Length: 216
Image (cartoon, rainbow, N blue to C red):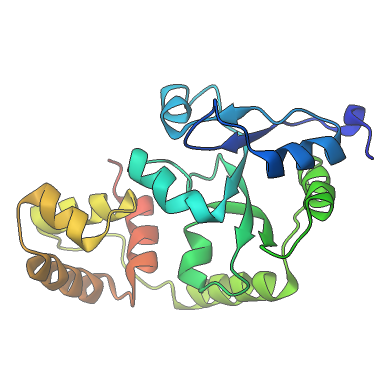
C-alpha cells in the first residue's frame, strides 16, 4: 500500500450518479489509501474552472452515457487528464483520441490493485499506457506533424462552420442533423466538402483543425 502523503494531485471519479456506490472504485481507493471524490458530468461543467487540471477516472463502459448527459463534456480539453478503465483490449486511434488527455488506460482484465498502482504513478506525473497504445498515438501524431499542411484560412460556408462547431462537441451525424434541422445525408455531404477543403481524411483531423482555428 502506498502512503497518501506521496500524492500531490486529486483523481475524480466521473460517474452518472455520485450517490451510487461503485465497489470496484472502492477497491482502487483501498489500495491507494486515498479518497477518490465522485463528480457528475453536470457538476463538472458547472464548476469547470474549479476542476481544471484535475484527473478524471472513467469507466469506459459508461463513456457514451456520460457524454450524452452533457454533449459538450470537455473530455478532450487538455486541462483534463483522463484515466480510463474497463477498456476493450483493442481501440482504434480515433477512439483513443476521444478519451482526451489520456494518462492511463486499463483493460477489463486488469485487477484493481494494478490499476491503483498505475493511478499512483499518474498522480505523481507519470503516464501509464500499454506499449501498443503509446506506439499507436506516437504514430498518429508523427503523421499529423508530417502531413499538417492544412491552411489556416479556408473558404468555409456558415453551415460548414456550424457543423465543425458541432463536431468539436463530439456530436454524431444524427445529432448534428437534428440540431440543424437538416437530413443526415445533408450532414454527410457537408462533411465531404469540409474534409476536401481542409485537406483532411477524417473527423478527428477536422476536429483538430477546428480547435485551432474556430474559437467558438
